[in-house]
Length: 320
Figure 1 (cartoon, rainbow, N blue to C red):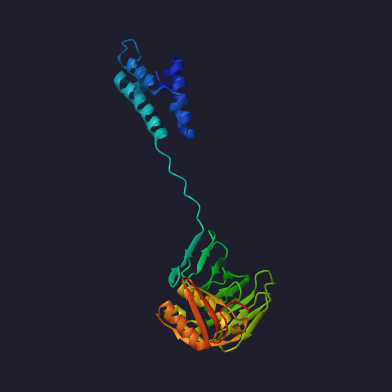
Figure 2: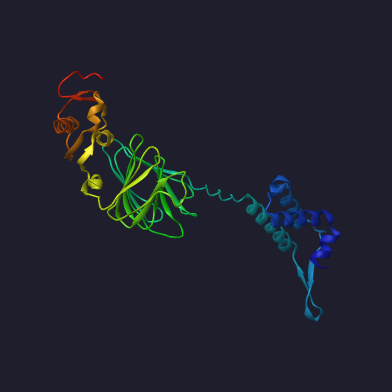
């Protein structure tokens, strides 16, 4: 008789076979519902049972080929084992979603970061770059705290932009430097290409467009200004480990020196903030740099631990 007729004559075996087939089709764990050891024992009993029927398959010419009980039992056992092995196989762990990436530098340290799109970022001291998990999906937006030099891989379909301190710098195929400080706003120096500088919450067409050689600033009130053909060495010298100031107001020099030397600089006389600094630093110690700054300003600087106080050359060092 055929296999189907044999299963029809043995409902219990047919039910077991159907259950295994269904489990294999659905990919479920049959070991919760089937006693595998008992099933194998049952097959073994069939193999040695002298009254167990032989299965036969009709072939052409009316001949019948009979299959030994051992072969039939082995096939059923193999089927059971195959299903059990399949359902017990470890499932591949789900791939975790991409995570936010954060790159940060310490006092006096710089770092070079290569982004997934091929763009390169040089981080200044005590600066942080945050790259969102969906960077490059539809757009390429990063967040910067501190100083960063961006050499952007241009892609008009996925614009590149930098958010920092209330400012938004949008690439139009560019190499540019960004200096940001909570008290002084954001300053952008364009080396090549062009960018748009505007307030984060402003209209897409607002702000100013800077081209190569232009320097733009966005103050704490969100007002954008532009200086054409004004980018100088000092604007990008920090990327090579040098601080260069040419007639820079002390209010802008202080946050940069704090990032490079880790010394909090306080000004006892607020009138000193309007004085300009014309000097450079390249590897000097913190004490030596403060001494140079004091000579440039014509002021006294006293350091106590990690704090330095700038005061007029004459008069008390306490605040007025």
